[in-house]
Length: 226
Length: 270
Image 1 (cartoon, one colour):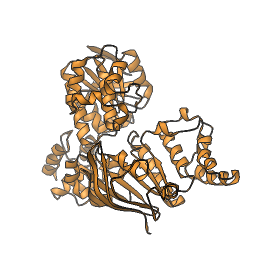
Image 2 (cartoon, chains in turn yellow, orange; image 1 turned 90 degrees about the vertical axis):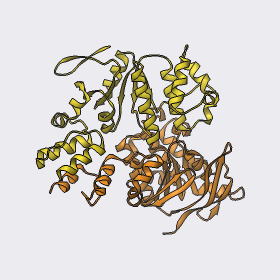
Image 3 (cartoon, each protein chain N blue to C red; image 1 turned 30 degrees about the vertical axis):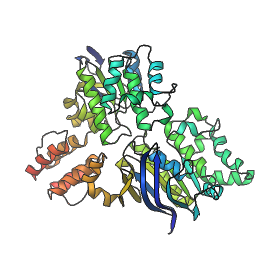
């Protein structure tokens, strides 16, 4: 699938098949427009409004024809067994409600998904589950968009990135966008911590580190240069 | 400063699963204490139990020298206040001003007293602009501020807050933690809140880490963060600057934990 996103400089056409695309925007309208224009399913963890009595009833009420085999796959990813489907909604913890919200949305079988604030309120174990989930979706030909308040998560987990204020400013491979620190500074976007350290080390101390996404990688590099 | 709350050997079981097993801790007067637990570990059950909404299987819960039991229940609940995670279901009125007045009217305070109490709360929590708004018009953060304001109007000694920071962004969380400090300093109210995010406890006086139903750490943030490997094993995500600083400390490249990347760069290459 090709997505055409008009940036301020160019109309860029990028093939985003099987991709994870992060969005950093200073204006929420961009996300609303994207979701509406492309008919994207939006998953918002704050959406805890359920009508069904049980998990299964909720999934069936949410989708006319839920993909049951996909539901089973999703349960496995979240380390849940089939008994979860019979649980009453009122007995679920907030984290389990987040799982249900994800399952009821994805089981509709739409292939483009947008995760709003993808890791919000999750501990490490659950962050790993969400990473497992988006990789599973990617392998199964989904296109995943996500935003996060933490720019380090935008840099670390996406293939492509969109940065926008009132308009889309740039749309490119994530590495191209988030290692161009002067560009991010110019437009007042958040900068990944490790990119910023790499940029500062070179600019102010003339120390050339590699751009890293992982703390363990930059540590080795710093060690060589101190 | 003395203790406003003491918990002795508290055990909580739900559906044959032990959520908390013989935990004991205290909360100082006018202080903020965070309970840090992984997701799905029973934070809501703990707060509901401390609030007297749900039962406990064993142990003692004492607030303001009042033991939580059937005989003392009405006195106990006047000493506490609770905000549960499901914030939308905790409003009873249509607009903000009515929501703030409701608890005091319910407790038969006079109009004059109500105005005096609310004036202090509205000023300190900067709520004037919200007073005429409908509850449905409020943002998530504004709803939290209104719930906090409504929950302190009867001057409780401690407020229990269940994981409400969860859906806030970094700056909004800082804003709420500042409000907790205002409750401590301006209203002499202690705060006990639960969270799964280490970022939430950076500016907090006292942090209790619970894993598998037991207290595994109880100290200041700066002490518990020195046990970053254990925290990571329990399942907490270590904030990136802390993770980087701790690993650099391991290789003797820096002496301190840095929260500021500029300072870290300047320290590494002086």
